[in-house]
Image (cartoon, rainbow, N blue to C red; front, side):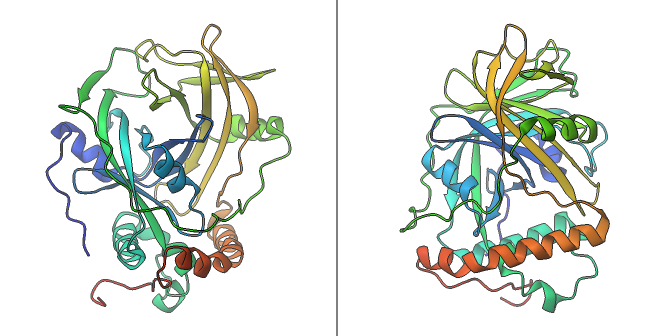
Length: 331
């Protein structure tokens, strides 16, 4: 079933940013309340801002099902058609959708091809049909509750703000599947310091996520990051909201304008606002695809071999068959 964007509750001036952004930072909360932020591709839904995750790696969705308070940050202009887009921080309530895996896959095939055509350019359909491990999706629909926006990543002045009228009520997610979720499929690095050196030298986009007084994650762009013996010294603009001591994470990332590859590294720890330091506890596992088209293809193929074994089990946990990879006009 096609998803037709409904009336947008947010200001009209933000509509083009949401529609054209290739990447947004998506933040959810762990069981212990630590924010975890990953770059993902955003899509406009029916009055919602939606992201997806693979059925074979559902952790991002399960965090949202457990705690619907999430955040999005639109601060990476690479690949966007908007000239000098504003930086937009969204806090919202998530609903997880995995009750119809075939409809989810159909939507992802259709909308990802429209937004990221270069990602599959030149690949025959018979090859794509074998990639159900990737196209089988869980959608997370985010209803905005509060939006802050600035002219640019400098955050040099106070933001403009929109809040949802009335009381914020979390929409119901689809029921949790039975059985046990799959284990992590990638291992975290043994040393966060080695990863930090690479991130500081190679990944230009850096975003900090904290938890505000109402329990929502809040993701903000960082103007400058420096190495510190305990982690990272952070420099945010004067227009950034006041930050409190608490759990936090920082995500470094980069991608091609056509999104034919991407790199990301995330570190979690605790923010010390007095000296603007993120004290790092560990670096998280990541899924990056780099090395040109050949390197990306090799990485994708390797990931497929590791993940396709989970596909049938995760569909069965939801009482559904494995979805087929179908294209518009075939259903």
